[in-house]
Image (tube, rainbow, N blue to C red; front, top):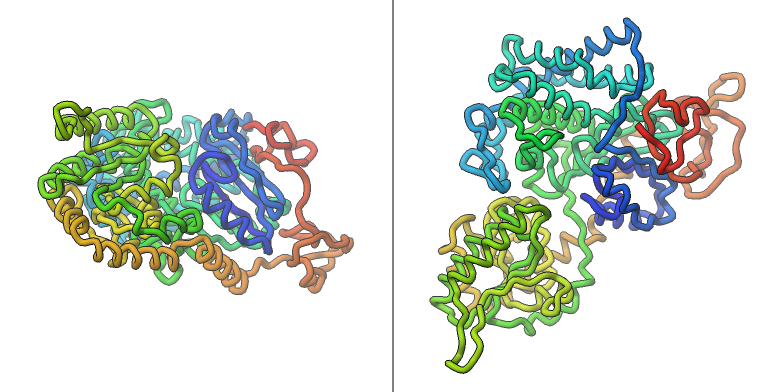
Length: 623
């Protein structure tokens, strides 16, 4: 089977999202062939290069989302009219009052997400998975099928225009696009928040929409590209799923969408700035939320199977219109072997030490953890707290770490056993790779109880690592925590230091209970969260999709007559086969496999590579 793996800001680059699980998936399915189609997010990411790819990756094509030069394509009168009609339909669908992602989170509550990414009263329900009207307005079944069809038709109309005319970048940046958005915002029945959009807001929205729709201008959808694969696997929603939607539209290739972190949720909780770094208004955010909601709904509607990484992500997808019958939860796979030594010697843990492991940022709520630890010390004076992790990138992470250290110094002045000894603080801040904690497993080995205090959490990776290590855990009830723990640890409400302290004290005082919970947690993690179970699940899903939705390709001979038996079964076996002298219509160019160096996607009709019809070598392509 030949898989087109679609990524955004991750694999095969050294840094980025979904890099590890994609690499494990590709290496674990050596019987299949993979073509990688990657969208990069920054120049730095491209400069860092790729990880070493396994032999089953036959081709890599890349394109940047972070920059795009004007394609220089000049439209005639008919093409301009086509673009105006399609873009007006797209804008009207985005601004429709029954949009799948309404503006309730933005109308009258522009501060739903406060400084530092922490969710306020309106946004906390979103972060916890309760996607109500105050948390984005995502109402189950609220999206009209007619408006969804309207958005889909406009999207594919733009894709066909880009294919016919050679590109779409300049048109999406044009005054025509901005005026179409303005008319849609002023139309009767439009989103209330959109009605107040001013010209700067419309320019911000048009720029963000153009950036997301850049894959429409790529040359990835011909017979020698995604049109030749048996299945498209998008590793996230949003822009990564867009090439899969177009491959399905142009060549009938089935689409699988995997989301371990829902892109729509990330949009709600992410930056509130435009592409130039300026603060975006509530009207602009409402319009962008509606656009991303429509795009997510279209991806869910067209996908043969949707695989969320947990029930928390599944609820988001269902609220956005995903069909429950098409959803199959596939937990992320993690390497359990690196934690085996710690997990098999749980008795070596320090019974008086609590451990927190993760990235230090406001969403982890270390402030509540420190206050809870002050309560713990009243009951268990010998207890120590080790906070292991590095601050999040940027000034915010460093500032938050400094604030936590100052609070720890205030709550716990250095203590000394006597008048002639040096004082010691019971709270320590350490990083992986330092002298005290050389490796990640040793961080978990340091304590008998692992604590998670987050107020916002998707899939708690650190919690699973602690489970692999056989550690008893105390966690806050956010994201997919309860689903992951499954009764093998203690769960308390978020932002409740007293409840967190009481749970920790109960485990510190009961070694037998700690051992039982740790053993049960390790057994659960080995059953559900290993790389092997992840690879087995996707292999089964690949076969299921291919058996139900095979791509119908027609081979013809030199005279144009169809050859119904020209594709033998051997072409599905890895290897190279003799050319049969046939040519392919809307499909794979003969029974051989794709060969040649990695290439970068270029806009249709661009000067480099367009004249000769040959792909541009990696590093030479440009928008």
